[in-house]
Length: 120
Image (tube, rainbow, N blue to C red; front, side, top):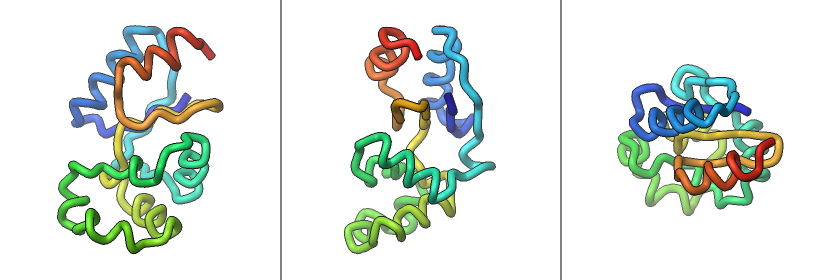
């Protein structure tokens, strides 16, 4: 599994602690230093079944500074993926990527359902 997060983010810290406490093995990737590519994001989007907007860090400073709330509805999916790939801080975090699922953000119940009850 691949775990993408920003080490200074408190939500990421909670998710990482949860993974560690439950003995989940993962590869760590700092989303700020190593942005996801648009190809990766496109694949994760497809696998997640979520709307693309869920991949945006809507509470982040960059999201607000770029006025993306108003701009996103007028952008194509490719434009949005390119934008996300350009700055890891625009991406909702943490991301937990496995072969069978993609989790965006950290909700303990969702982690439990995917990782404790359905061990890969």
